[in-house]
Length: 215
Image (cartoon, rainbow, N blue to C red; front, side, top):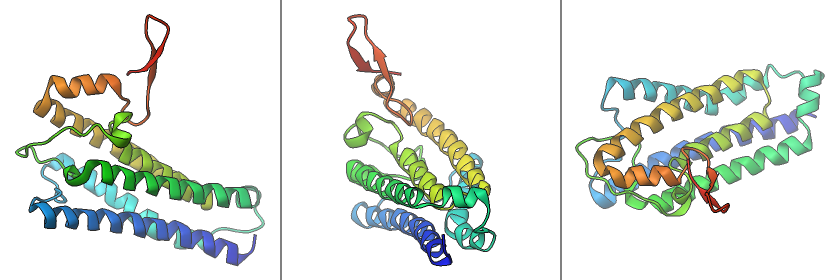
């Protein structure tokens, strides 16, 4: 691998973070403009403030860590020479595209119901179309897919900590959202939970031997 190849990987990694989080902000503005309601960008509780701090850690590292890592990657090391090969470039790029494409699918499916934070005084409607037919929190799934793509482009152990923080934050955020939706929609959301997985589709075998989605 030559420095030009590494520069391309850094640009793809940092660029994907900029595109992703700029898209989040623009989608929030779009909803505010069309509906007059906030997308709940501001944390509303101490727990949400902690989660926002974790997301901020992920955002900063997603965008700024790749250029920093560039100066610490030695081309002659076995780890680098083994991982930084064309297959890892193509696979990493594919994950970035798939993850962001999935995110846009989620935005389209949610429409103006998309929110970042939880406003417990707000009325909500349950969305079960698109990826939400199978997974309750597909946005977090697709975000993880993109971060794995960044790791394949720049396979440095330090970035695994970023992915770990994202996974823990997504889990806690998903739990909060599920608790909120259960309180708002009750049995309707409980039935929805029985048919979907939290981050991945889940399948069970019914007594008749046929397969169906379940917990």
